[in-house]
Length: 171
Image (cartoon, rainbow, N blue to C red; front, side):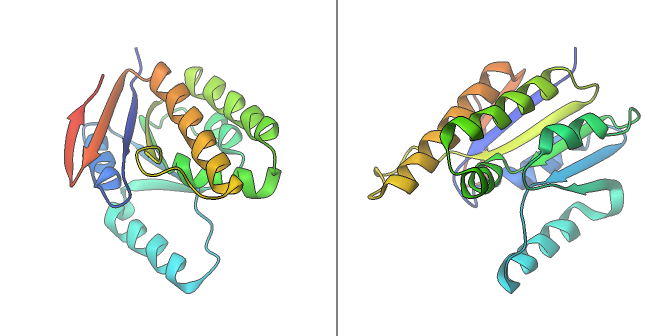
């Protein structure tokens, strides 16, 4: 049975570093990045992540159609890290503008994930533990991110919550 490892926690909680650590036990690796670089600060963050993971990964970048990229990953890849589902949710909400359209992408992704040949590590922020956002768009984002997290956690073989760099196994 293949591994589907779900990692969640707050921003800067150590999720990405833990994902790289989890991936060490596998052979050939791929990294599917969902971020788009709109400004210099984001470009610097992306570059830092590239340096942290080193040259041992096939790197793929896709802000919206991660299900399609997942299906195209070579058969010899043992593990795929998808980082980050929360950024992906924001991309989808920005481009698609409706929860119904966004959730069709989520359905396609979870289907691709369950039928994928490689093990997967999925990174996502937990955004529902703070105060209720004061505007409709932020509440919609929180709700969509929460739905994605629940759907992915349900099909995951392992789930971890990270807080202050400390991983706690949930499942």
